[in-house]
Length: 246
Image (cartoon, one colour):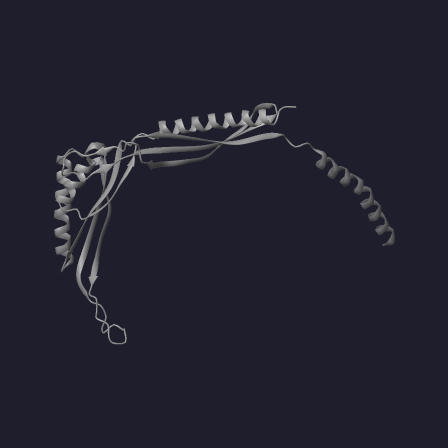
């Protein structure tokens, strides 16, 4: 056993210089010299489309009565929108619900409820998301659907029908900004830029509404709802890395 232990110790000692040499080799391996910068690009454009979610909320003593009243109002709204030129592809049911309406029981002297709430009726909600492609008609159509019975409206959300060209313009602007910064930093630090090593897209934000100056007003008549579309900002970010020369 002693002889075997002596052999193992000798073998372990013989391996130590090899491990040390490998560790030393890893430590002195040169790291790649890079310059990395981030560029940002913004492109602004006027919206050419608006999204509006409109709804009809109806209450009645029975669910059937509430549903019948709600369906009649929504059918009237959809029919008038079709007559006004809205295409079927530009409208989509985005929500429908039937729920009970409960009574509000009185509170006792100690603040507790005197009895449990009871169902006193039913509420039906039907929501429709509408895509409006004629910006000058947004106010007119909002006024029209309210007149026809819509009593729940959210929006408008402004967007563009073809965002890809604008997003690509923002990407190109981000690349130009990154190249400008890279050349600036290299000159200031007296570095020599080599070939581009890596390009990574950081983010591409959805269009954000920015009020234009002057603001665009879309009013078809004196009775229309005044709507201001402003403009949209498309933003992109990109990171560019260069190898540095000697």
